[in-house]
Length: 161
Image (cartoon, rainbow, N blue to C red; front, side):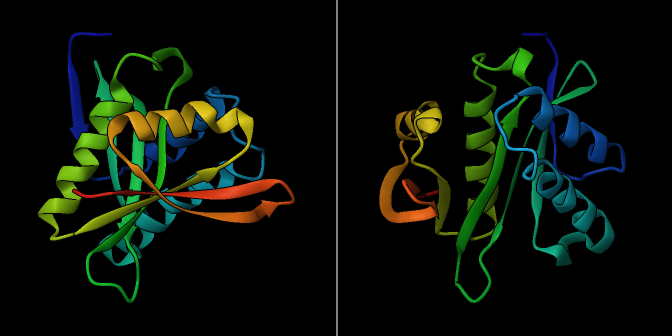
């Protein structure tokens, strides 16, 4: 990994393309999921913090190579959803995801949050994702059967900031 890594929390218009590039690079997400990732950045740029979306971007030597998106769940007291955590394919496996998780935890704690919920699929292709969360210390809180599709359950993890 490069020598200079930095985090930033305020998206810029360039992050619309950065997020699209990062998500596409993984070849992991379905085609209809990519615009959703981009829309969250656009929503934040348009409405600011009122959008409810918080971001942490990882810049290495001035190039954005990973990001996370999270936000407080409406009508709760301190419960947060963790929407996205994506690292550019060429930088996966270098510890960036763990750094981002720690940054999200710290931000949520700073906001007075008490719990973070993380959702993912039960499909075999998501096994590395589930293992990542479990190795980080997230606990499987619930499984919603056939949520995404027949045979594709929603796994909900819980993490205390």
